[in-house]
Length: 517
Image (cartoon, rainbow, N blue to C red; front, side, top):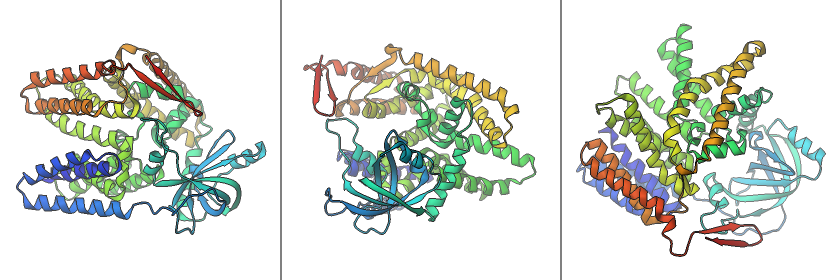
């Protein structure tokens, strides 16, 4: 029973959420512990307990070692600045830096510096290597949200192991950063920068977003439209990217005469470099780990299991970085992965058309991400159910292979050959963007839920889980469907059940404004 690994993985996630978010997650941890105990398998239970103890020890050892006090007093700092972390926006420079030779500070700080002139801005924009900086400035604690449910900058930085903001007053470039991390960041930056002159700009922006995890390359209105439609997961590097890239690589290298065993080593090297170059995004890390686990099992004549590989990577991630559970990409990546694996396995036993099973699986994925979108964005769109299949088809069959080919031709400088392909890709991307901007105005499918109360989330999650269990066991489907329908109806009408009206709070910086309708 190798799949028991899912229990400590979920328990570790519950433990991390209980530590960083809410003590109510302790109820989930208690349920999982009772469930494992009821298996009546001593080896599994003791392994489960040992794993949880190790996760607790890891979280304790990684607790932030904060300075005893943070004041406005000026101080001198030596900071390493990876070039791929540099951002120049208007008259402000921002980057994630590493404090050197300091015992009383957290290792990483978020740095901000206000530019004094256009020439100074040009000097910063001309940087193309990681550098060591000598700075004068002061430390600040990141701001928390002033109103409930607003963006919490301190929590956001905490997910990145950053606990301080360094406000820089004066800065001097001491010299290039010769450390391994600095050189690696410099190499990644220079490789990605090879596509900076790629035209048309739409093709360049989507290439950087889909293959290098730079979602800010896409224009903000279009990105918000994808987010509103619930299609933002298409831009997160995931198992599809990994499988697609490795499949194309395998076809090429096997035709060149490379053996399957040799290609496995090549794939291992590629995944390690690609994952490290993109700073270990959760979706790519999960997919790469599952692929490597399956390759290892096949190599040793054992049964592969994407489910076990995914659970193992999730557990390893939480052991190394418990705060990763707060990341939206972590939550969506593993939730969708487990849903597709488990429910896809259950629906495969059903009699019926393939497209109908795919539509039902898509509906289940939309249901399960609904609570996460409600908590983080306070809204949800049913257009995800209608458009996910269409967009996935376009991205999988046209954009991914087309953009990958266009990037290869750009590196080879075959502009004449790539011109027709670039024109077609630009036309296709424009069509997708225009349709997305138009579709987001379909207000009938768009639910604004606000911050849902705890009881509403509990009812919704219970109904979704009951529906999934009913489909898996092929029993009580009508009762579960009725329960799910009633819970969705409750979600829809809950904002209108408030006897005090619908309250919106706007934070305008100098004061707060209440609008009650």
